[in-house]
Amino acid sequence: MSKFITLERFINEEENKFPNATGNFSAILHDLSLAAKLVWREVSKAGLVNILGNTEKINTSGDTIKKLDEFADETIYKAMDHGGHLCVMASEENEDILLIPDGYKKGKYVLLYDPLDGSSNIDANITIGSIFCIYKRISESGDGNLNDCLQKGFKQVAAGYVVYGTSTMFVYTTGNGVHGFTLDPSVGEFLLSHENIQVPKKGKIYSINEGNSNDWSNEMKNYINYLKEENKADSRPYSLRYIGSLVGDFHRTLLYGGIFCYPADKKNKNGKLRLMYEGNPMSMIIENAGGKCSNGKMSILEIQPTSLHERTPLFLGSKEDIEILEKFLQKEN
Ligand code: AHG
Ligand code: MN
Ligand code: MN
Image (cartoon, rainbow, N blue to C red; front, side, top):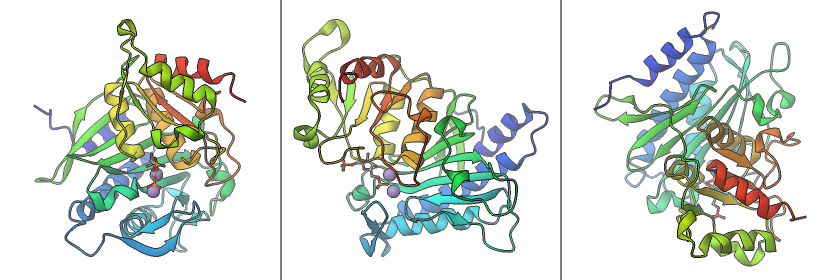
């Protein structure tokens, strides 16, 4: 039975642990939880209102923007733009940084987000999500800038996601554990349901798009074949689970353990997933749950970003699984 701790109360109790906290940071998380409920409201009835399907637009990554992508993007921006705690934002669906409108106070934090992750699954009613991360600004005051956004992942002060699945959950970390809150639609509150999530140190599930296997490096092929070999002593062969929504595949990996992989391949030298609003936030979360992140060679959180929408090979999961993967890939050039 849930202890009926709402997300709002949990955020406030977390803030009280830091005597000189100003409350700005908590206010951002409160605003994000409102944005999550507003997106959930549309996602949960997407099939009933004219919000399925594509717009005629293509985003910076070359993906067709779905109507729900656009709705989620605008909803999150509008929920966050006037709180006075942010100086700049950046979103998957917008090529450039998003300034705070004139007339609103510019605060000391930066928000990057993937408004709707797993868009290709929307029309098929498969789990999708929203991903966010927060940094402290580098610039002194006024409008934030691109430099405020292009910070290494280990500088994040918070990261989280909303997973719109069989139930809708808000999962986040501020560096003090990873905590999950399940939305009770009857009261419109996120209630604490998964306190201090710890990813198993080793799993038996691997998650990857096998359709790309002909384009993987030999080292990557060898690793996946290793997972498929019979060896009961270390839970092999692993099972394959892949839904094509990072948030859904990540959430299962966080709770069950194992490894999520989106490697580079011959066609995509840096893989497909975006560093700033997919790789970095999920990496902060997995590391705070006792797991590990990697681009195959190093921690995702150590990568110095050079552009807002840059891609990275992305491996996330149980510590021991990532360590074995890195051994296989260290010879990869
Ligand atoms: P988005 O919908 O935000 O563009 O993200 C889609 C991503 C990610 O959710 C998922 O892991 C990956 O695309 C799936 O890619 P493939 O279809 O190539 O497997
Ligand atoms: Mn995404
Ligand atoms: Mn997206």
